[in-house]
Image 1 (cartoon, helix red, strand yellow):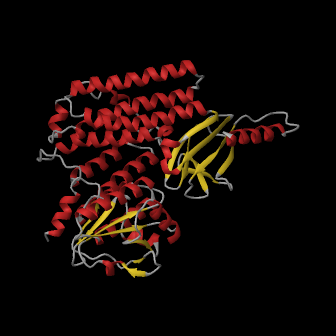
Image 2 (cartoon, rainbow, N blue to C red; image 1 turned 90 degrees about the horizontal axis):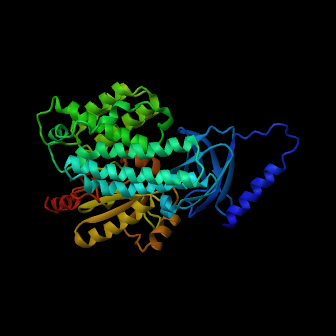
Image 3 (cartoon, rainbow, N blue to C red; image 1 turned 45 degrees about the vertical axis):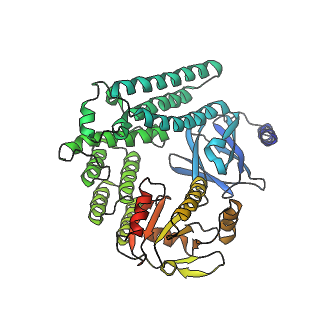
Length: 473
């Protein structure tokens, strides 16, 4: 609390020292706060994907920043590999406090503008919990499912009404809060066919009530205001995945749906291209689904076909180059090939070539300081797997460029041994060569140093089946 009082005093003093000003410019906002356990010494503030400034933390990991000529709306602040949104309106003075070890859950706001932002972050956290509940509800029949999610929406609507009675709100905040409720509800509808246990998705769609997707007639696929907003983008992804089911069914004879089907993924890219005209929204969707396909595919021909479709529709040269390079790397990591020659460093500061440490069946996984939950969960999982499968060598590589000391300290503080732990000698080049995306990517190598699967995942329900197959080769 002392932090916020001191910052508020600084702000008041600054404003009070302004002399001889005939006309006060009220179109500004202050953003300040404290980062506990920082990963870097700065935060990055942006709006609509354009970086406004890099704000340095002081010696006590605190910062204060004034935004002049404020463009009111949703801003994004990033720290390390995490980010969150903040709503800023004229004359707001919002101060945040968060712990990087529990980024979203620890985030709290104080100051002028705190109520609306605490409401939004709490709504975000509640939606995360609700998503897990939705998975269970999706096994219900369509009518019963709709009753349940209608009830969930009503609870949110009533909570928002009570919030408005208690606190003064603005039209902008109400617009965002209402969209949160609506797009969350719409997403619940769109995911239903995918999570429902039935394998014949086309038949399931035909069994839905006629008004199940009645809201679609009012959807704006080019809403620039919400173009960088989480709930809107999640809805669009779910919506296009669902709409593509119908398109795919027109030329598919297979009743069992496969998300990684090439034709389905090409249909989805084509549909996005036909319905979305806003360049940023279109690019985000095209990029998301293209990289999602590539990082889960083992088919070189399929990779090339999806990349070709993406390149013909995208206008973003930087992303086109990135995905072209990613596809090239993924295709070089196909089953039966060897890993590229990459130097890694152990915690005795010895440099070795990655293939030299593979003397038997090996699992290689990766971690980063900026993804703390994954670091912690993956190392615990590997500990379990090492006990169950002592014949397999489990190698873990940190992909950051922070040096040995910081990585070793984090490992030891959490009770993880540095044995079979490494860092990349050249992180950027190695990360690109091994196409490390997403962070859960795991590479399985056989005793002959040949790749068995370059796109596995230690958290997959099928992972241990892969390990048993590896031992039986």
